[in-house]
Length: 215
Image (cartoon, rainbow, N blue to C red; front, side):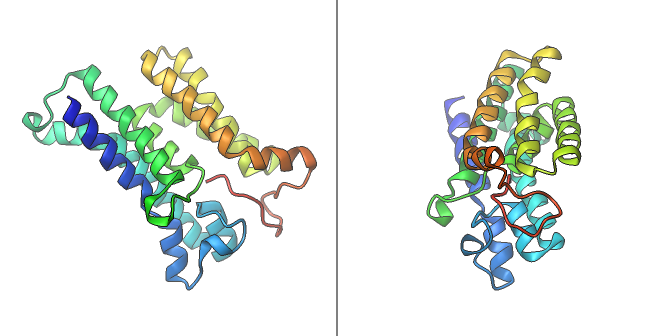
């Protein structure tokens, strides 16, 4: 089990560290760390390069989280002998993979430990780990975005909803705990956005002014 945990952490981190925002922008001749909000998340890529590249980065970043969580269950399904753990052990491996992927995205070893805010990567992971909760989170994101037009606020509220949803739907305590920790991490990563929202200077969807992205 210890070996499996190490493998889950390493693979999860390396998946999360894949700098898709940087790579997609570089393919267009742009250093994403030098333009817009200087963040490699999907929102900044979309604002700088358009919806196509931005949506591509969003999908790829979400896929990193989904694969980090779903890798060991997939291995177990294909060949149980290669992943001989019970349901509790599998849950731990999923959570370790998700945490590692989020840290990898935010502190990528491929870009000098710079990265995004892990919203898309975390969302992809929770889509596998707790699909119902993530579906509710998506609804809260969409509603908040429609009302406020702040992507950052929508991302934070969606993240904060997860531990409450996990508790309401009687999820295992590790899922409740890790969703609370990740929500706190997302808020911490958005501390500059919070300051701008309070000051009334945060960018809104539909405006040309570039703000710090949520992804």
